[in-house]
Amino acid sequence: MSEILVVGSLAYDDVQTPFERRRSVLGGAASYFAFAATLYARVRMVGVVGEDFERSDVERLGRRGIDVDGIERKPGRSFRWFGRYAYDMSTAETLNTDLGVFGDWHPDVPDRLRDVPHVFLANIDPEIQLDVLDQMRSPRLVAMDTMNYWLEFKKPQVAKVMSRSHVVCINEAEARQFAQTFSIIRAAKEILALGPAALVIKRGEHGAMLFTRDGGAFWSPAYPMEKVQDPTGAGDAFAGGLVGHLASAGRSDSDELRRAVVHGTVAASFAVETFSVDGIEAASTDALEGRYRVLRSLVAIGAESLAAAAPPPPGR
Amino acid sequence: MSEILVVGSLAYDDVQTPFERRRSVLGGAASYFAFAATLYARVRMVGVVGEDFERSDVERLGRRGIDVDGIERKPGRSFRWFGRYAYDMSTAETLNTDLGVFGDWHPDVPDRLRDVPHVFLANIDPEIQLDVLDQMRSPRLVAMDTMNYWLEFKKPQVAKVMSRSHVVCINEAEARQFAQTFSIIRAAKEILALGPAALVIKRGEHGAMLFTRDGGAFWSPAYPMEKVQDPTGAGDAFAGGLVGHLASAGRSDSDELRRAVVHGTVAASFAVETFSVDGIEAASTDALEGRYRVLRSLVAIGAESLAAAAPPPPGR
Image 1: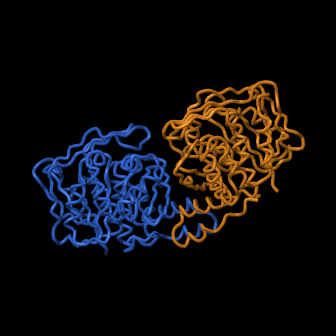
Image 2: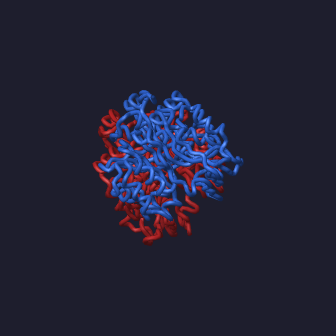
Image 3: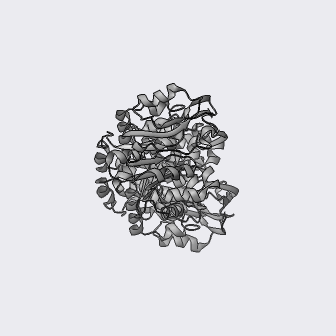
């Protein structure tokens, strides 16, 4: 089975929506990513937690087949995030971030993991992302995510990570912020000019777009949902479906990238159905394939419907 | 050639964007609709203008093959609208509306037009829409649009128009307003329960969605554009492409409705490229088919691409 190394945060989140509040639930970009990607490939995590991190939460990841041996435990508190959503249930307002043990963490990728062919640099300090990349021997595929905070305070470092990645995965507002333009098309051109082969722009309830350096473009709607309980982690689960599919396919040509975007969209839909990682943790390959078919049928016309309704390549 | 009757406003617009302002340019929902629909079918207009309406503007419609004999000229001023767009170039803020001769207009559909098989009730007072419907003898297809103002002040009348239409065509915010819910899916169910066979929800730069009473759903992205000069009339041109295609196809089954949504999306893209109706007036069937193919290629994967790249049914 193909392998993916993910580096990023494991965290406890406080999440407030207009309808409910949950405290100290398992979160972190790497957690959401791993629960999604593990449906497609063997996921190996590199990260750090504090003394307050429950052993049962590490075991929870392990039970899902995720390799947790690369998670360090350090003195201090785990990463904590407190965010709030307004009635549109889309962009989070960060009320507090406590980096905890991530504050002065320098990752040391275990030697046995330095040859893993697929690498996902989840949203985290871009200097940590670069540090990890420097330790990997010759990854076949590097994908990355980031957030507005790093674009504001460490943009040159983010640009460097982008230039060393094959797939850049960010949300719409971040693409606009990075390129200082409202036009998504111009933003895409600017980011692709840094070197990545593909850029995926996540648009929340409006789906996702793919731009490739050869000029190709692709769009997928979001999976239509009557109820969204907590949008936290949608982008990370998206990346899990995306990178998971690419690792499983063993190729990243234009068609596989397109399929990967649909898989990402599906993974995100499971993540937002519940608070914390519960939704994506509970997703099965069958459920995933069902939603993949629904998404493809949403854009199909006539004879094309038949092709769209064919099952996607198996997750494993 | 198939025929479409459109009733709605012919107007002079003052439009202000963050980048430019244009005064007294030809506008009105029926104008945008007609310039788009005339690419597909014979369009016959019913409307009213004031003494200030330039004869050359009526001739401009006529030159494009639009039947303008049903346009009445009455004492008083023509409909005028003054709107402003913020930097997101999406929803217009109406600064002033002067209904002028539309204020106390009671349409009298010429007898020779009462058998036209396809009817589009452009955004206008729902009582005028009902008045026109009462005069039509047995339309095969009725489509309608409306706006927030009528939903606020004449909701029961709007609901009545919806219940007598086959295709309801409104924007996302209006769907939410009508159904008093944030969920587009719930709003769609509520509107479809009134009786129409299909509901099209326009989402501006996020494309359009189709919901049919048999439970079907379809999404099309918007045509990707680097520059939008003036979003005014996008929804009306959208309806022109949509109804135009359905009239031209002579069917409104699920596949034709899906194609019609893509045609609507294409028509809207021409409308927003320039101020006033200039962009949609200048659109050719070739240009339209080109953008149709681009839009379909944006959602295609692998073998499906071939089907998507096949030309759409001819416009005429």
